[in-house]
Image 1 (tube, rainbow, N blue to C red):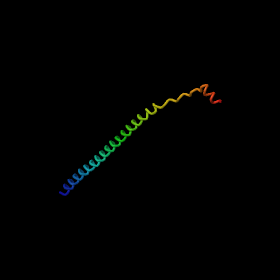
Image 2 (cartoon, helix red, strand yellow):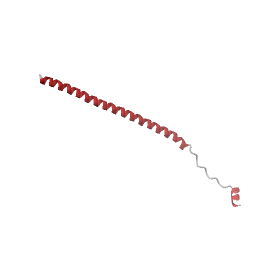
Image 3 (cartoon, one colour):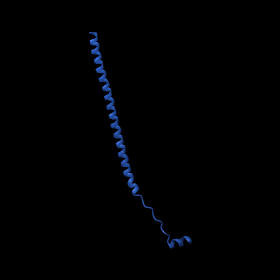
Image 4 (cartoon, rainbow, N blue to C red):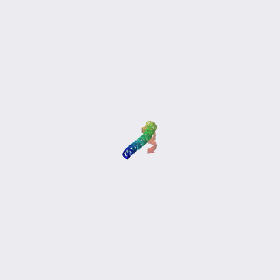
Length: 83
């Protein structure tokens, strides 16, 4: 009789232990998925901000003024300098 109860108690303990282990595994898996989703969202937001900053910086570079060509001195200007 005692062995029968002992085996039943041991089977119940194993079942509960198995459920606890699976529950802990599931909790870790869910936590990892949430962390991955949060990090992915942060990465995508950073990439979008970088693209936006690059797009705003690009027109500034394209709109830069061309260097002004040096003007030749006129005869009147040369006369004024030498006088």
